[in-house]
Length: 574
Image (cartoon, one colour):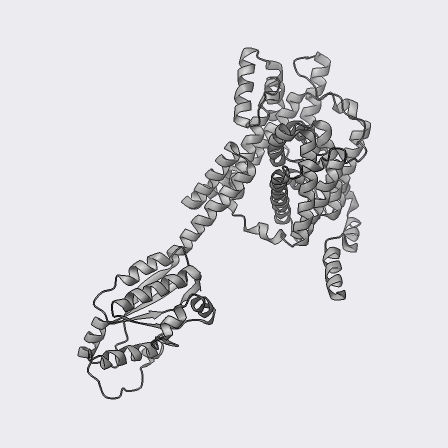
């Protein structure tokens, strides 16, 4: 029991902040503070916009950025990760708000946080690396399209229509705009988006998002543009933590949405942390600890009215590019946003919704990496198919279904490619010390096949078809030393083929069965079938001699004097 407790405590301790983390925060505080300030300026309009898009309001986005941003920075597994509300999570939350209301979203966030902590304890972080790149690229492209479409109502200056399908809502918003055009809102959204996109190319280090939002707010206030409605009143500070939103009776119905949110939070956070590692030298995140930090962040954020959070790729990239060295930068970002919540809520409440729509439209455009998409599309047809299918599923269905579909299709195509690597070739027998006449008889009555690659369910039936079609032979030798892997299906198919051949009076011999294959062959009875008539041999030369002896005994071949020692070529057969 004491050993188990020590092991459990060691596991928990590995997920908690260490002295090294604190020491790193003191090595370059000036650069970290500057990076944190820059990220906070970039994050402010995004937090407001994603809060509004989620359906819980701008204050929910700010609460998430502050609470989740701070906790994930302290407990997460990356020194450079910046967490908060993201567009991908917003896409998942909109239908949950429509079906369960704001309380359902907060409950889902808390449940997802607990799930992430459990995944961290189970060391599940390492498995996220197996998500194929085309799935990630298609997923990102689909999210970008959904985020852009979600901004259409605010960009057009019309009330958001009813519905949780983004394509339907967008079409209804366009119909409303056609009835009563609001060119002021359109002008603000387009202007903000253009300033951000052009400015990013001109001066990448300047946070043009906040510049554009401030300019749009000043213009609407000075000109008195009522056609561009503002965010509205914001509370001056974070609400007191509360569990009043939690409805224990609804936990069962919210389980599936919580699983979806937890899966998305894990995927996006670990992807973002990997991006941060790739942008630096010497940085490497701990995936399990990152899941733990994101779990705590998502448990705490709903208590303060925040939405579920993830690692944010765009904000993390800004953090790295502006020289962040440690977790102090992400903590500074959260602290500055907290000051804004407490001190500048009246000013923030005047920001036009159309301006935030422009920020998110530009963000959606910048999420699409044309070079990466082009590379994936040109790589293979399978990669292109997976990318397009995942993107379309993200747009037409939802993110979780899209990822599942992408993974299933990618797995099926991968199995198909592996199955094609399996080869089943007839190989010539060694001519080393046979006469021409004897070799002719051997060639007519003995056939050797070499099996290369995996013999598993995706390739096994092709093997059965080819093997059982052999004709005009008395002995079949199966050279199995190059079989890389075998499953139960492969073993059953092999057994079936041996039985079919023996019913035709053909003796089947096998050589080179590996130790790892013996267990699966034995489990289905194939090993016993091969060995019943002495049909299993360590090497191919032994199998050839046994085949010749069988033919001599049956009178097909005439017995010959004792053979000379085997040639080196025959001894090399395996």
